[in-house]
Amino acid sequence: MASTERHIAVTHLIAQPLTQATFAPFGDVLELKGIPDKIINQGMCGRHHDLATLSFDEGRAGISLFNATPRDLPYVFDLVERHPDGSQAFIPMTPAPFLVIVAPDEHGRPGTPRAFLTAPHQGINFHKGTWHGVLTPLSAPGLFAVVDRIGDGANLEEFTYDAPFTVTSA
Image (tube, rainbow, N blue to C red; front, side):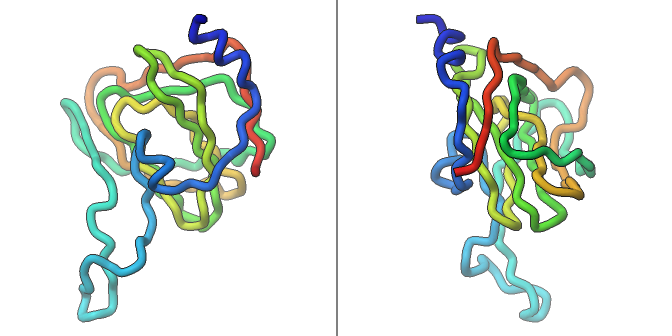
């Protein structure tokens, strides 16, 4: 059976809560993890250290601010993208949850996507080359700090599924 036939059969996704265990094949969850690794600033700050694996080919890390238009659930999509030359971290600048869509790589093409709903104050870091949906805040303002590769050359591949998917909440 061709890979695209499987994609057409699965058209409804239920967004699951985002956890490090379920998201691990695609990247890192950025969140406080209980007890800080270090106490700094004269005992006034807990540092939760080194929460993401950043990886960049032929470039450097840069921080950008994104202001995305909020979307609603149910959310319909047919496009995913990936960045083969660098990881990409999304750090929300508000406590509002957002939708995260990812897909496993199947021989250079995205497989069946999965959807996650972040908890307040969670961010994510996509590993280099991870297929993912576009930035999808669910409320305004859709403000995010983004850490990703800055460098020459195209670092974007897009893929459009044959049929759209609809994401709803659990």
